[in-house]
Image 1 (cartoon, helix red, strand yellow):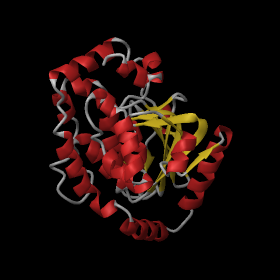
Image 2 (cartoon, rainbow, N blue to C red):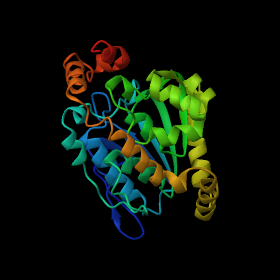
Image 3 (cartoon, rainbow, N blue to C red):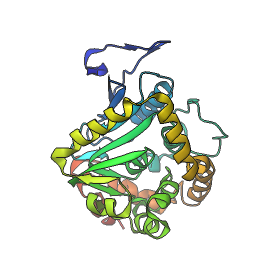
Image 4 (cartoon, rainbow, N blue to C red):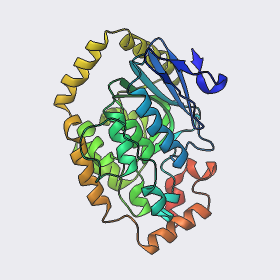
Length: 303
């Protein structure tokens, strides 16, 4: 396997040179599988850098015929992705100004925000996408994983949450649309309105993830599955995704994200009192490594 960022090498496809050289991502391609490692210290925050680079990667890999499977993982054992940068709560205009490349999806995306566009573009990739989860994934980090085709987690080492209600808003990166088909309306409302942290075993029982596996078995299981799928004929992958997608939400996700975006507009940008709470939480360490380990408590202390 070749690590692009480590050696500075660029892969050459059959048509065009496809550079995968980023600051917050490491991309390695082996036997049809692109291993994408999120590496954006200190806690893999979805900040301007990481969101823009993920947009760029998704746009590039969509046309890369060498890649049939994408495995998304984290370099940090404690954080898959912490969440979207809380700075976007303090200065909403910076969120609206994130990169907005044309990445090949169909439909009018003018009514959805940059995080929703990333989720939509991940969800509609022609490749099979797999999240290999360990550590905490909250908010946008969970939405990122939900956008992929499959999710496998390290039991006892993975925790998931949508904590936006603790911040005075609601999820705005796809969770309201992606969670209900997986776990049902009642459990999706429990996750979104409760804002609590869930362990991998509960997430598996809810249908949130495919499986919670012993941590020492996760790499081999996901690697074997990814290689098995990558060895299929491309036509099989395309046909399977199209057929399954017809029974799921793929064809309606853009419309649903538009509804989520309208709902989010009722609570974001947040009122001054909420912004000051978030400012206090950040000042108290909400986006430090220690504060992120128990973010829910960090946020609740500012109420």
